[in-house]
Length: 254
Image (cartoon, rainbow, N blue to C red; front, side, top):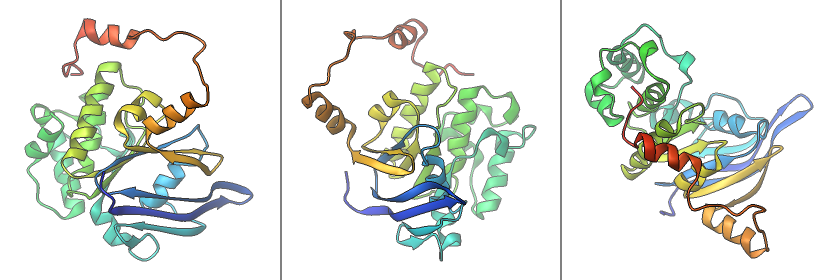
């Protein structure tokens, strides 16, 4: 893991009248890592991401993206980040290559739609309409659109929610490949196995406050060292492993 900071959150606070959604949190994200923000619904995860993405105003504190301030440098920040849109953000009747060209125009960059789609193994779907894609393909396409402007950091908000086991694991491999290509990944997820496999470090947030930040391995080891034991003996495989073994791990979410 590199020690060069690409994202700094300093005493960040967001209030809605009497509700404090984000309560003075601070953390750094390093270049080239996958950082996961974990917490229950209403913990402040999405609000924090939207502030970092310049999509929501903060109440106080400071957020720096590659040294740029979300207060003063929003236009510059938008040029170096990628933000995953939800399905409602796409015109359902446009073909994928048309959507890529549309987003390329918004970023004012020239791209080859098939080349961009090839990153997420959707080049054969270039002439397909967005509405005709499977759930896994839509998620891969949404990540594809975050890469159009060759960003330094991408933000993924629960990227695998609603996907079957095959599609989830295919997306995990894609996210790891994006990191290996030099892009920092900031994500939220409700799936602890996902965070354990993907994330270099995680921050656990609850009621707007960061409880702890560390690597998944360190957090698990600390819990075990405190004497924690599972009530039920866990087998060396689980039902998801059975499903994947019987149906295959290859891309099959067409």
